[in-house]
Image (cartoon, rainbow, N blue to C red; front, top):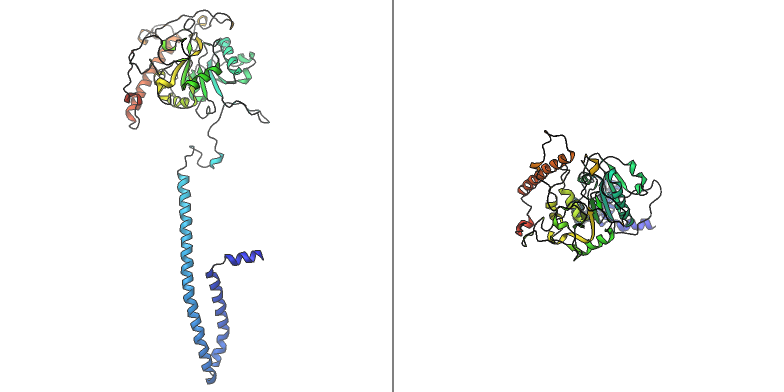
Length: 437
């Protein structure tokens, strides 16, 4: 009964009219033969003709009413069809305007996962949910000759909940199994590759999107006076998107004065000594860090990753342009942290062919490390390096030679990119920033 009632309610007036008209015609067809047979009888002719006229009138009236109903019903259907078409067009336009990940267009949006992480997962079951939502990542390019330095670094960062990833540029992984933490960190091995080569290929922004800060460090660093958690708190408080820990000047090899540790504040953004003009507002006088121990926020790293050239593995020249990725004013968002500092031993590791010069004077954490040569001068110009064609191959010299070549290539590419991109405007050129030092 409920089904019949619903069907009746859903019928249109036009459907009811057509059904009644059909019944009327059937009934009239049944009466028509009798009427025709009666036409032969003169007495019955009049009654038959009289019955035809009312019927014809009713039929005409019904056709008139039907035409009106048909027109209304047709208009309503057209209107509904037009509304449906508009809705479909609206949905279509909305879908076309959706920003979908390249290659995911064939999939429903809800099933698409655009990012990942570096967490290792068990073969069965599910890992416990981490309580700490503020996660950070330490990555280090390492060789087995620096096991002791790297061990101290990894142990300290793991104790503060960091995810650790080691890039083995000598291809040796098994010899690290002596350490208890070996299975807790990620290992990637590729012979004679730099940390920038590894970073471009294994630290894609969508892979490290879950980490607040990315530490991209060299292996020849001492961390006795460094606290990773306190460091992160400092850069967050100071709003530093790109930073590095200061260097202990009495024990480190120093190439740029801005990296020297100061004792009057937690952070500095300008050289502590007056080596730059007071009007200097550009790197390396401000908005600049050295690349032996850079720390990037998630947002800054996304920008820096795109700037790293795939084929320029030494990344010379990159430091001068890092300020463009500082998510704002580089004179404020780039800085050196003094409250937590490190020692830079300056060891020629990758590309070195003199084993006697690749081992640092490592003591216990509580002892006083041997002082390493301190210098405030830059590397000698490449023009003074001996030519490889006339002398035995010195791997370190060749590495520096290649670095200088890549530096010039990078500068040329930057100038060309600025020239070709008509939509890009240099924010620092507009500000008229000066670099005088």
